Image 1: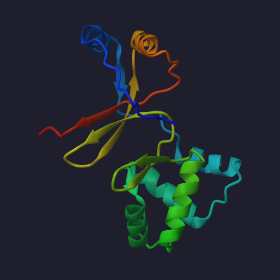
Image 2 (image 1 turned 120 degrees about the vertical axis):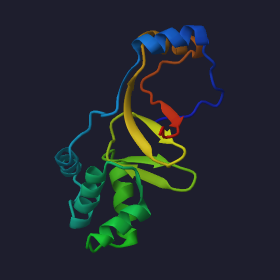
Image 3 (image 1 turned 90 degrees about the vertical axis):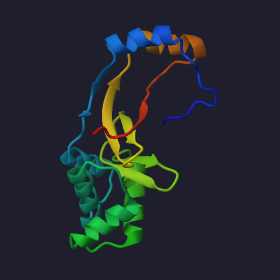
Length: 166
């Protein structure tokens, strides 16, 4: 579970800049479970693998996009899948509640993605696209944040906001 800071912590930019430029690593291909992993997780949790649930998971893994429930319903309907709005919403909630898919809260909709493992996002403000990215912050930066705030960081994600270049 991720929470936004109520009182943002400002870090010394002289401290932060060398750490990030020399030690932060990023990959645009987060380590993702496969569709087969997701199906196996459903089974291990005792979740029924209906045609509709398989279709939703297949769509999310094939598209590798963050989609709203309406977009998922529309794409599945166009592909000839016989599924109702309610079934899409119920399946998405069950899958995200059980940590099989990701649910990203937006002001105008919830978006669902195929990754449920910890990762960060690049939010394109001009295209509304969300790009999954792995970010590994330097240990020294994590320790500095912990020292300044008095907390123990167990996990994190970084949200970047950007526009497409070119």
